[in-house]
Amino acid sequence: MSASAYERIRQLVIEEVENQGLDPDADAAAIASVAAATVDRYQRHADGGSELHRLRDPGGMTERVIESIAAFGPVTALLADGDLEEIFIEGDRVTFLDGTGRLRSLPDPITVPETEHLVARLLAGTDRRLDASSPVVQARVLDGTARLTAVIPPVSDRISATLRRYALRRDSLSHLVELGSLSRAAGDFLAAAMQASTSVLVSGPPGAGKTSLLAALLAAAPPAHCVRCVEEVRELNVALGPHSSCYEARPPGVDDRSEVTLRDLVKLVLAMRPDRIVVGEVRGPEAFELTRASNAGCGFCATVHANSARDALEALVNAALMAGENVTEHVVRKVFGSSIDLLVHLDRDAVAREERGPRRRTMEILAVQPSFGDDFATEPIFTRESLGAELAWSGALPPAALVARIEDAAGVSLRAICDGSPR
Image 1 (cartoon, rainbow, N blue to C red):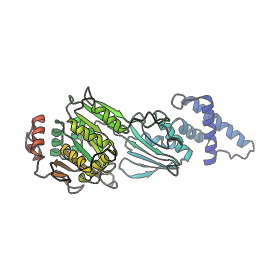
Image 2 (cartoon, rainbow, N blue to C red; image 1 turned 180 degrees about the horizontal axis):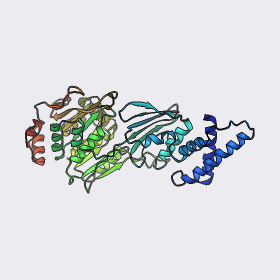
Image 3 (cartoon, one colour; image 1 turned 135 degrees about the vertical axis):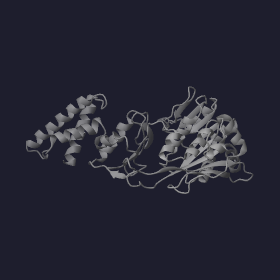
Image 4 (spheres, rainbow, N blue to C red; image 1 turned 90 degrees about the vertical axis):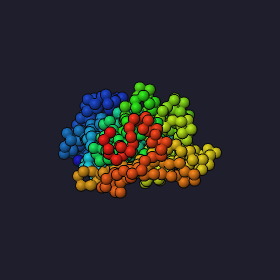
């Protein structure tokens, strides 16, 4: 099938669809009719002795054009596969992570105009745009089941996009235990900790399962707790209590006056009497507002990209200093050192293992202890030596004050939980 013939026919169909004001979602039958008529006209011109090359498979050409305009082109079948994690678009090259976590290439040909149209179709149902004035975009797409990150020139050399699918299951700590990410004792320990207004920082590299663990932690919190979740692009999928809510940041409009940042949202929810503030991914000055949350006496949960739990603390401090407030690093460290209760660090295989996909594991759970210096003091509670090893209790417990707070809220013995004793 000639690529030049395809692009010529496809462009003619797009122009006619636009002229008729057809909606790809609502007018699929009309678009199919336009595509069939355009292919038929092209074939007749080719048969009439013009410079056009006759199509060997006009029916296949019609189907491809319809799929490109009314659906998502050669990527349509991938989007219907619930096992896929991510799809990567680089110009006219599409790759994806299959159900085992292996990187594959799209088997069907695709063109740059098609990938550009694909991204435009994905963004059509959102309030986000991708154009010369806004060459970078992040948005929830496909009815909230995926996150799209896309970049076009001049920021990139060509259209570049990543589509990350969410698992719509209700994540729970017990489910993560079944998957091997947590030990039973560690899962019970975190479940007990969430009964109190503890502050938990979840860290790890991209794709390690931070959002899934955060959702599982929130699912373990009492429904009576007022939880306020804020995210750059919403990913958390968790049933919250009747007086809890989720909020999503908004990029600036054309006039630059309608932007709502993650920092704005943290400030907002502080005025809404939260028991716990949740920040989906801390990357910038919103971290400083968490110091205010600490002073307000409410707990918080957040995720951060880091190579270890200790690195996560440094990343959080550096992000808070980005706010540019007249606060020293010493003060920020002191506030976080006294307010963060637990650190949970995750990791994953760099590549898929055989046909079972990459392992995602909780590598360590640390308790933050009071410190008299500028450095953070931590105590390992659960540790895993490697991805293939067991997550084992270290024999230590969090500081006595935190133990008392958790045991009072959960009505359990943390020591009995950690050593696996019957409760």
